[in-house]
Image 1 (cartoon, rainbow, N blue to C red):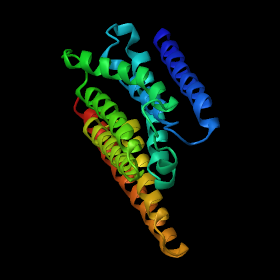
Image 2: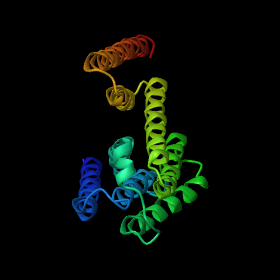
Image 3: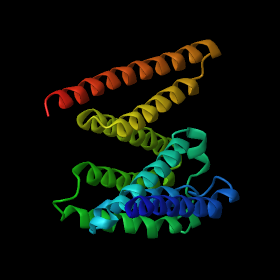
Image 4: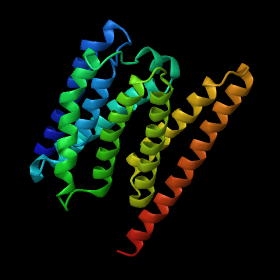
Amino acid sequence: APRDGSCAAAAAFGVVLACALALAFVPGGLRDGALLPIAALGAAMAAAPLVLRSEALASAAAALRGVGRGVFYLVAFALSFLPVAEALRLRSAASPGFLAALPPFLLALAAVVAGLRRREVDAHARGEAMLLTATVVAFAAGLFLESGTGAAVVANLSLAFLAAGRIVRGVSWMARGAFWEGLLVGAVLVASRIVDVPLTPWPRATGAFLVAAGAAAAGTLFERRRWHALHEVQAHP
């Protein structure tokens, strides 16, 4: 029960912190890297399991990691659209969005460096934290360019890698939550790119339907495989 309480408290803290940061920058308009601090915060929270050594804090760290990943999904999805990336381009290193992103980014970087020395850290969590932290740098670099194309490409690639990682984790460990999270992120990403293509409505709707049908088929196949795996374990304990 205490662990459940710490998990819920950590998740609530992460959500409140992300919302507070969003309220501080987004209402001013999507400009000058307004979403960059939120992406950096997501990376910092996702790196929590790399530094929280206490076993009692493990569930809280896992909750923060999940919230951080969710926050990063939202920012990356917004940046995956070229008009949004264009609007968020950084004019200078003195931009409020860039400066505000530095503290959480440095926290994420410190956590990643600390996690490299710890053998007990889950390899998937370490790789995920490294990916998110490196992506924040790539976001900033892309937003400094004359066009937002670089940031949009990075956003699409990061979402694809994160989705693939969660799917692989889910299949390898028969973890339902990880698999469905990755499948949902991947399906939404592909469907949004299809809808974003300048075609007539019918081809776009057909493409989105095929993506949804493919995701449903993949999910059904996973659930069947998981069901068989669980029954094999019960039959041969």
